[in-house]
Each structure stands twice: as structure tokens, then as C-alpha cells.
Amino acid sequence: MAQYDKPRGALFVNSRKEKDTHPDHRGNLELDRDLIKELVNQVNNGEQFGKMEVVGWNKSSDRAGNYISLSANKPYVKPDDQPAPQPAPQVSDAKIPF
Image 1 (spheres, one colour):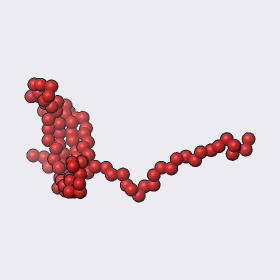
Image 2 (cartoon, helix red, strand yellow):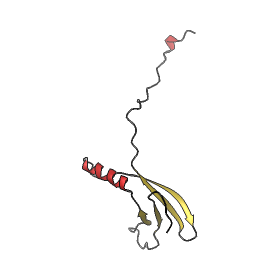
Image 3 (cartoon, one colour):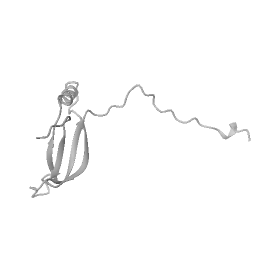
Image 4 (cartoon, helix red, strand yellow):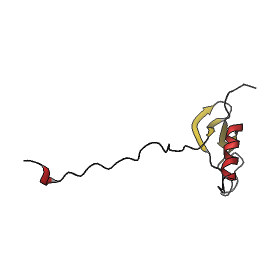
């Protein structure tokens, strides 16, 4: 088995789909210890559900055909230290000297 340095996952077309209620894709997603701790912290801090960011890339291989390669990360949080954008100052026609 090939070694890799980050958790990963993949979604494949569900070849066993027989009804509209069956999922279109099936697969797995690995989570590392830090992400699991983050999810537990979210729930312990009052969130009903833990949230993570999931990103995917369309890929293809001879063995699996077309699939979506996945990675999971802590959710993006906008830094509080960035000032909110200020609206552009309004310029009145009365202040234009011509």
C-alpha cells in the first residue's frame, strides 16, 4: 500500500444504484486527529453539528474510472483582525469646482 502524508478520500459512481433514493456516489473520507479534535470542540462548545470543509477534484484512473478525490480541512474562519471594508466616500456635485 502506498504511503501518503495527509488524510484523503474519494467518491465513486455508485454502481449498485437501483432506485432514485440510492446515492449517486459512494466512498470514504479519512480524518486526522486534529480535525476530529476540532469537530469534538465544536460540539462541546454548543454546536449541534461539527462542520468541516470538504474539497474535491475530478480525477480518472484506468482501474476506478471517473471519480472525485477528496480532502477535509478545518472550516475556513475569516480573521477578526481584518477591518471591515469601508464604503467609498460619497462625492457631491456641489463640491466639484467646475
